[in-house]
Image (cartoon, rainbow over all chains, first blue to last red; front, side, top):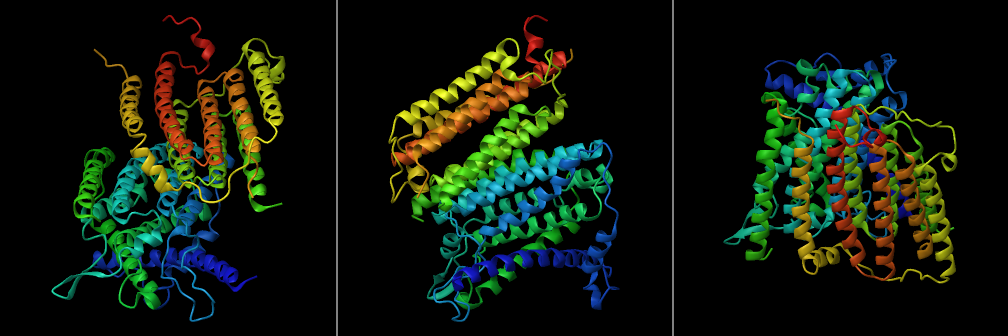
Length: 344
Length: 173
Length: 101
């Protein structure tokens, strides 16, 4: 039981617990920010300023009755939320959130703040995102109800359509960074561009790749089925889409999966475009920079949801295929041309 | 037992069991899901064979896209359990017609191949040390194999067009 | 410390045989297509195993192309299945032995 092994195990547990906490925090932040955007109070009763609201939500969900329609396929009905939640958590296993650290000298050699450093980390994230579709499509099918089926099929068709733009925007970053390992990509974004000896802009990929960043965030919002792309689960349209027939903890798992997917997309976008943990004193407090950037992106997510009206389904699909995909392909070609001409 | 050997047997067992269940299942949705499990096991085998790119591509393309397509078609067609004109409980080797042929062929294939491979003796073991990386794959794909690469993109375009045309509803009038 | 090459080839042979059996034994068009995919995957495994044994990248390249072709074939095959189903509401290949409308 070397100290490194123990540290790795603790790190894995830590990441898991932190993801759960982040979902809880997001529940509160979403409702509070929604309140602020709509000029009302949001939760304020439970705990000071309503901070215990997520706890109340969880307790409520736990005490609800777990229902299952009689005509539903029991095995798939139980499996679908598990697949959704598992894929949401698993994608975070390859996301680094800090520089190498020795935990103030407790370890003999520095350890990366990442559960697993794979050198095809970007592909792994993409693969797990593709597997997340199954949770939704199986949820829609297994409940054996027309709202669920329609919602499930629409939602999964939307997800696989936007995965293309997601991947192409990602490919443009790979062209610039010359590596598929997220740690290497973040390390490439160290430093800054200088003008007359003064640092002008940090060397993050968002600045040369602003189009790619916008495409990535848009595709990410569509991937996680958040507004304005949440037609398949909109209350006014399809009751609740693919999770109509779910209640209590199964519903909580879908809920959880959605928030954790948001956190993962924000974390990956931070690593790819916003320089991950780069910032002043990155070696010691890099993770604070990472948290700040992820928090900013999550705020952007919530802001989008409560500001924009939702797209109708055909508008959504047309946008994904006819606008976003060509833009991301042109972005990739332009990036490749730029790298060839200017030399990385 | 070394962890790689154990992993090989574990993934191999999952792949074989899942594939057997795919062809033994009557519900097409379960068949598709079991095949996804089989693909996952194969992806693990590719990782063991030092091919992480192929492993990731297997999950992204096969398990993540092609199987979603199968699942969509099964759901849209509401594919019924197959009605058959033979007694399902009879073992495949005793069923009439092409089924007996197919089952016998499969058994024959396995026996033959296992015999051939066992007879070869030292069919070779894997060389240790440095092997190909994703960079090598990319480089070879775009230099030595650039022409097939471009041709497959045209192939996919043709397949897309063909699928759209074939599955279109007939125009009325 | 990897399993010997013969083990991988035997595994691939078994998978290929399972796929072949599936094509003959099953009377459902979609399951037949799934069995074809099993066969293609068995072949992929053989290619990658040999590519690793000969320390060549060609194995992985060919797998890349096989997967692409399999995707195209699955798409067109399923489109044909949909078109056929629309005509006769049946997924049993025995329904189309006569090939006349």
